Image: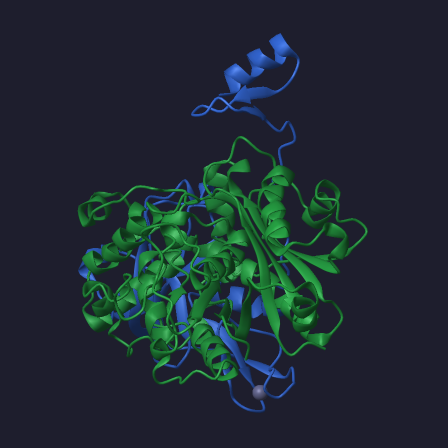
Length: 395
Length: 162
Ligand SMILES: [Zn+2]
C-alpha cells in the first residue's frame, strides 16, 4: 500500500493532424520521453494502462499494439474508456493500483488517432455519447449539440453572450500559440469566432475543439519507489474525485452546471484538504475541459472558482489569464491544443507536471506559489467527470 | 479521391494515396464497415402503441408512484418491476434549445433541425425536435408534445410552441 502516488515522468506528442505516423509510432512519441524523464526502463513497469476511446482509430487492441511496439510485453495492461474523460480515467486506474499496493510503477498512455476516419464518420460517432436510442437515433443530437443545450441555458439564465463564449477561445488560442505541442499555434480575435459558421447554435466553428491525433504519457510511482530511485522531479496526486451523470440529458435537473463535475470536485477538494469555499486560494492554476467555449465557463462555477452565474464575468475580466485570479488552460486547452479524446486527460497531467516544476514554455508559465494544480476532465456532457489535484508537496 | 485511388491501385499495385496537404503516404482501407444496431423494445411496446394513437404513454411504479420517462421496465427505487402504463399530459415549458447545423451523415436528408428540452407539467423532462422557427422561441415558452411522421416513415414525438 502506498499512501501517496507521484507523477515521475511525462511525455507528449505533437497534437494535430498526424498523417506522418501510425498509431504505434504515435504512442511511442510520448512513451519514450515518459520513460526517459522518469529514469526507468520498460522492465521496471509493473502494469500499464491505455486510455483509448477508440473513436476513429483503426486499432482495437491498443494495449497489445503498444506492448509490442514499446517492448512492454508480457506486463499486464488494460484499456480504459470514459468518453472524453478517458485519459484521467486511465490515470485513476494506475493511481488506485499503486494506492492498493499491487503495483509500484505504472505507465499510463492516452491516445487517439481520430483522423484515421473521415470527418463525417467522426461526427456521426461522437454524437452517440449519450442515450443512443432516445437522443441520437431519433433526434440526431451531435456532440456540439449536447453542450450547446447548456450554452443556451447559461446565456438565457445569466445574460452571458456569444461574445463572452468567444473570449474563452481567444484566451486559449493566445496560449496555444505559445505551446509547440498544440494543434493550433495561432492567435485569434473575438471577430474570428463570431464570424465563423454555426455548428450547433449558439456554437460556431471557433467555439469548438478540433478533431485531433495525439498521445500523452505519464509514469506513476509509489512513495517507496520515489524514495528508492531518488527521484527529485515529481509531483504528487493530492486528491481525485470521480462522478457519473445520467445518459439522457432529460433526466437532469440543470443545464447550467454539471452535477457530476460538482460532485467530483467536492471529493477531490476534501481529499486534498482544500477549502471548498475558496479553492483558488490553494491553486496556482487549472486545466478544465473546454471541449467548447461555454463548458469552460461552466467549469469555473462547478469547480467553485466563482459563484454560480459569475463564470462569464471571470473571462470578461480576464481573471483566468496568467496574472489573474486563477490561470486556466494556459497550454491552449482542448480548444487550441487539440482534443485527441483518450489523450486529453493524460495531457492535463503532463501540463500539471510542467507547470508545477516550472518547465512550461516561455510566455505560458504560471507563477507557482501555492504548489497545486487542478485538472478537470469531462466525458460526454458530464456523463463522466474526473477532477484531479496535483501538488509539489505530499498530502 | 477514389478516382486517384483506383489509378494508384492499378499503377503501383497498392491502395495508397499521398495526404492532400502534407504528401505523407496513406494506405486507404479497403474494408468498409457499416453498422446497424438491433435494439430490444420488447418491454416498452405500449409506448409505441401510444404514439400510434397520438399519445405519450409511459411507465409508473405501482408501489412508489415514480413516473419514468423514457419508459422503463424496472423501478430501481423499489427493486420491483410492477409498472402501470399511464398517459402523461402533453404540455410543458421549454428549458433549452439548440439548432444542429452540422448534421451526422445519417441525418443528411434533413435541413438544420432544432433540438429542445422541455419540462412537462406532469414532472418528467423530454428531449425532442422543436417545430417552427427557433428564433421565435426562448426558454420559458409553453410547448405541446405532438406525434408526427418522420421522413424515414415512422412516428415520433416533437415539441410544438403553443
Ligand atoms: Zn418504485
